[in-house]
Image 1: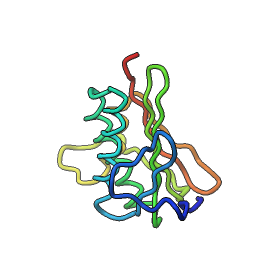
Image 2: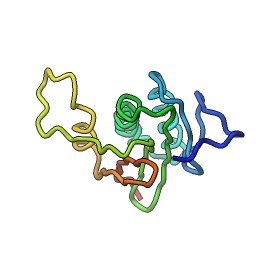
Image 3: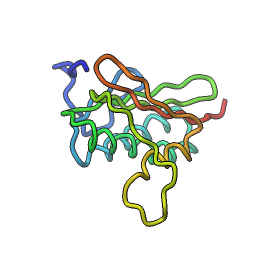
Length: 142
């Protein structure tokens, strides 16, 4: 996984993942920064109806990257194309996330990808030579 550019420090404020990857340190609390970033972009794209799902789902992907990837950082990117919004979280681990097929009400683990699977219109994982990108897509009004 390529390191963040020296001139673009990690952010705790809103940046623009629709133009380039936004890098975050891999530590607790960064899910909040990623959520704010996603909501900011969705509002700028005039897609407020997608804010709740986008916020929740990116939080789950970031949580997985922080807890399971063992990396010092992760990256966030967003893209919009006709009828779709895509949100990607990249980390240096090539370990695939595991969807737990049956999550019970009191389970404390296994809910993240279950929520992504349930609420996203599409989701998946792209393996890279230096890690993976876990992504979800939401249908957007034209």
